[in-house]
Image (cartoon, rainbow, N blue to C red; front, side, top):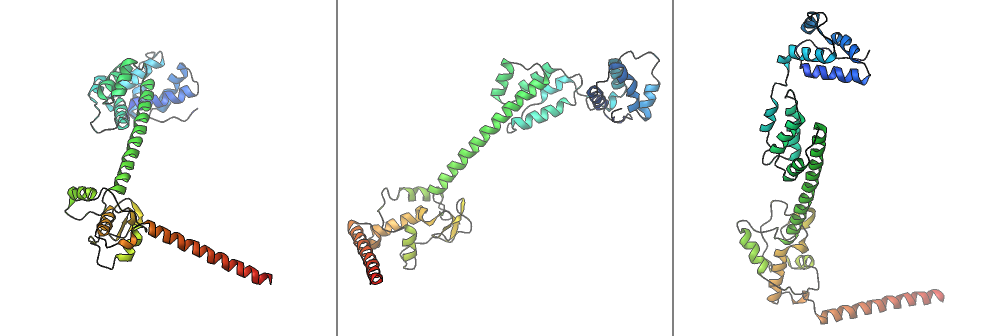
Length: 306
C-alpha cells in the first residue's frame, strides 16, 4: 500500500483529495480500490463522518469525492468564486512574472475553476500588450497551456530587461568617461557645459597629461579642485590624481585637460607642446642612442674575438 497522508477535518479537503488521487492514480489503482482505501486516510471527525454514511450511498469515487468535499468545505481555502479572478490586476510597476505568480496563487483559492474564466481573468488583468494580444488571438484551452504561454512571455520580458539594463550601463559608462567626474560642489550642470565648450581643439602634447601633471603640480600653475570625499566614476582601480581619489584615470579627466590647455594657450607649457623640432630632436636622439648601442656591441664583440 502506498504511503498516504491522513485527514482529521482541520485541513483543506481539496488538498487532501488531490494528494490522495495523485498517489492512487500513480500506482494504477482502479475506482473501486480508491473507494475502499480512502477511509484509511481519515482520522477523528473525518473518520466518524465516513462511518455515518448510509450503506450503499456511494457507488463510485466521484460521489465519494463530492460528499467528502461538501462535508468539510468550511475548512477549504477555495472559498472564492471564479469571477474573483477578474479583479486580479497587474500593478503598474509589477513584472509579468510577479503578476502571474500572484494570479496563479489566487486560482488555488477558487472552487470550480474553469479554464475559460481563468484565461479571461488574465487577459483582462495583465498590462503586457503582447501577452494580451496572444491570448485574444489564440486562447489557451487548458490551464497548462495558459501558464506555459505566460512563461514564454515572462522569459521574453526578462531578456529585454537584461538588454535594456546593459544598454543603460553602457551609456552610464560612456558618460562616466566623457563627463566631468570631478565637478566642484555647487557648480552643477552649468559647470559641465562651460568646461565642455571651453576648447574645441586641443594642442598635441609631447607627453601624457598625467606626466605633465606630475611635472608641474608643485609649480603653482594649476588650479587644483578640492579633494573629493568619494569615488568619482565606476573604475575604482583607476587613480584620479587631479582630484586625489579613484574612479577613472588622470589622463581622461576633462577638467585637467582644460587646465593644461589653458596653460598651453598662456605659453607656460611650451616644453610639452608637440612640434616637428621636438620630433626631430627625439628622432636624432634615438638614432644617436642606437648608434652608441650598436658601437658598444661591436666593440665588445671585437674584444672577444681578439
